[in-house]
Image (cartoon, rainbow, N blue to C red):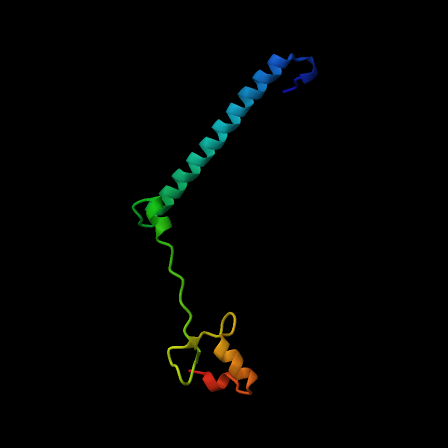
Length: 103
């Protein structure tokens, strides 16, 4: 489609802009609707009542088991992941090793 936009009036250009914006919005809405319909079909095929039910059924994160325990306060534990707790850092500075706290 070849249109010489330089030959069109301002009103004609605005009309083209208005119609094309509406056509783009309509296209995007149809595409979203189709995607939701396909996702809903997949959810139902997987045994969920709805797409919302499937999305709500995210698997829970598995909590890491502690690997280290404070010798005097057994409720203080550490998985070995992330930043070292203060009691571990202090003990390591004092010359102890992680093996001293292994569960």
